[in-house]
Length: 332
Image (tube, rainbow, N blue to C red; front, side, top):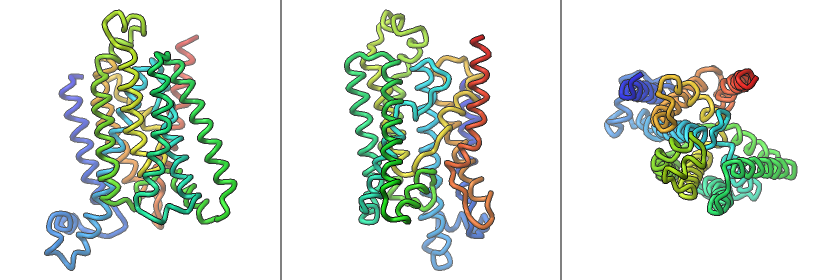
């Protein structure tokens, strides 16, 4: 499929699902009420619809768009960089360490002191992973070394998170920790958008700058170096870009998995299979999938709401098993 046609189609799909996300919710608002509430709140029925649209649904839709872009883009660049079809954002440990930072804030009791306390804790956790991974990348570590370091970080962060849950003296705090770890866009505000979106955008820029490098890396590290690719710079751009975008996403929404794994595989057959040609379509596809999942999460349970991280896991886990079996058959 032609790149322009593919990207336009995915952009239209993402935009349509963004609008759908604005229209879906427990408040029974008609389409015209929603539009008036979004654009003309000051003149509309005591601003009830305006509060719902501007302070509840709009931040949620914006975060769904930004986080979906981050996860899809990160999955695409990591699969190209590591030359591993099973790679996804969690493989470098940023999601797990960001989650650990947020859990530590819950455990310390600081989560209720400020709106920014929880995202700050998650960002500090993500920054820790970034510093460790960049130190490895600066020493010209191989991609295998980065994978092993990411696995070690994820395992350590998961163990420490379990320890915090085990030691938590407050059952309500433990419940909040578990609920946050399941991943959700519920009850987010424009302050969360203002905190996360600039960091995610910076991560997208760094990943975009690595496009030429991941194309060359598809030939192997030695071939890429012979083509003039500076491996240390490429690793820095990719690791820092993924860490910033995924860390910021985890900081405001918790752990949302599998989008970075599923979306690149669904879209890759529609491209020329060059890693760089997958970046933009995967970003748009990730946004579309997360917005669709978040809208569905509000409709699945009539009396409540399903965490979007649970829904993406229900979609992604069977896909992951199928992918493992397909890769195994290809190796035989």
